Image (cartoon, rainbow, N blue to C red; front, side, top):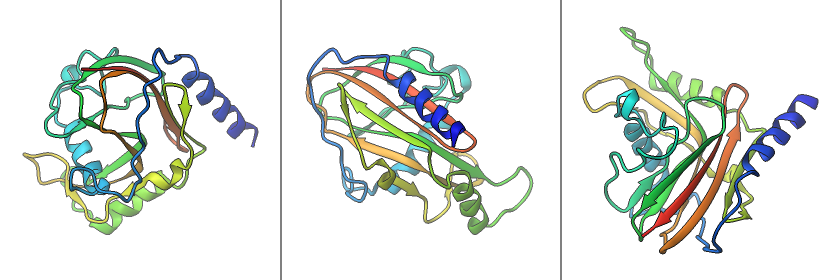
Amino acid sequence: MHSLCRSLAMLALCLGVARPVAAQTVPLIPPGKPVAGVSQEEWSKRWWRWALSFDDEDSPVADPDGRLCAHGQTGPVWFLAGTYGTARTVRSCRVPAGKTLFFPLVNTITMEPEDEDESCASLKQRAAQLTPGTAALVLEVNGRRFGGLAAHRQATRRCFRAFEDDETLAAANGFYVALGPLKKGRYTLNFGGILPELSQAVTYTLDVE
């Protein structure tokens, strides 16, 4: 219990540093509602394909400050990246108006081992075991803290190909949110989550133009 309390306090402290600079608001889309005609479960698969499509030096997930946030962005949904590590990450990004944001508070993926076959059922089970529950989930937009985030779990019901040029099967699980569509203005987003074996704490300042 003491360890859990410390984890919650640390995440709140990390995400409470950046303060909003505008009063712009944005709606949180219910997890069961499609975005641009596509289920959020499917968007979680597309998020992983996007996140895994870059070399390390070009990856928005490894980006220290937001300069790579526009890489690979197409269509009505704009992905935001989490991080590879547990250190708090602060980024700034320009986003076109009218986009809907989609991103993980905290998530995981399992893939077939190299040169070995693994059933889809096994992959999904492993992904679920890595996300049994969360000690904390945080989403704050311009000072407004959102609740009920545990309902935003997206677990892939069918396994998928994580890479366009690779037949490796994957399964994903985690907590994702969709926000928007975005109106012009400035938004400060603080988000993150804690799982038994990983955590993340991310701040974005978004200039929507």
